[in-house]
Amino acid sequence: MNARLTRRIAGAAAAATALTTLAACADGEAAAPVAGKVSVAGMKVSRDQALHDALPLAIKKTNTVRVATDVPYPPFEMFVKEGGSELTGLDYDLGRALGAKLGVKFVFTPQKFDGIVPALQAGKFDAAISAITDNKERQRVVDFIDYSQSGSGILVADGNPEKIATLDDLCDKEVAVQAATNQLKLLMSAQAACAKKGRGKIDIQTFPKDSDAQLALRSGKAVAQVVTKPAAGWTAKTADAGKAFDLVEDPAAPGGYNASPNGIAVSKTLPQLSTAIQKALQALIDDGTVKKIYDKYGVASIAVKEATKNAAVD
Image (cartoon, rainbow, N blue to C red; front, top):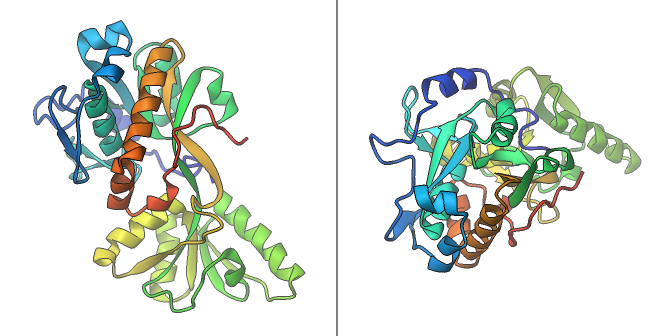
C-alpha cells in the first residue's frame, strides 16, 4: 500500500501553523550540526567533503537544506512529547544522518501533507522527507531519491500463537482491518485466493479506525490485523514495551505486500542536491547507518539496498 493512502492528517494543519518556523533553534534538535561527527541510532556519521563541495552554491552559502515534513505519522514523523515541538522518527533521523554526511543542516518544518509538493514547486523548501510515495504523477514536478519500500503488513499477538507466516495463512481466520483502505482490498484479493485453493474464507472484520482493529486483535476477537507494514512494525516494537504484538515477516514481501517506494522529494530546480542526497544515502546504506536507523523503529525490512532515483512502480 502507498505509505500515505490511509494516514490521518487531522491536526497536522494546526501543527504546521504553530510550528512553521521550526528549525529547533532553541534546543538544537531539529537540524544536524554542520561540522564534526554526529551520532544517529548509535552510528557516527561524518562529513564527506566531496559531497559537500558538489552541493548547489545557494545551499553551501546557507549551510541549510530546508525540509518539509508532515507530523505526526509514526514511525516516520513524531513529536518527542505530545504538545511539544521537538521532532523524532525515522525520517527525522535519516535527515540528520544525511545532513551530517553532506556537512549541512537539514532543517525540518511541519507542513500539511497535501501542501508539500506545491510548497516545493513554489521554492519554499528544497526537499521533503515525509514517507512520500514515489509515483509518476509526482515525478512531473519533483525528483525522488528512494529510501524505503512500504506496503501492507500483518500484525499478530505476541508469540504468534496461530503461526501465521503469509497471507495464505489467513484463510479460515478472523482478521481485523480498517475500512476503506488498500489493506481491505488486499484481504479481498486474498479471500479469492483462499477460495481457489479450496480453503475457508477469511472472516474479515472491518473497523472505522486502525486503533479499533488493533483493539480487536488485542482482545482476541481477531487473530491478525492487516495494516501498513511500518505502522505494524512500530506497534510491535512499542506496544506494552514490545510484549503485546509481533510483526509477521514474509520473505517473499520484505517491504510489505504491494509495496511502493517512498522517496525524498527534491525540487527539480536543484538537480545537484538530488545527486548529492542520492550519493550520501548510498554511503549511509553501505556503512550500515540506514539499517541501524530502521532497526531503531522496528521496520528494518522496508529499507532498500540501493538509493535509486524516481523508481516508481505505478
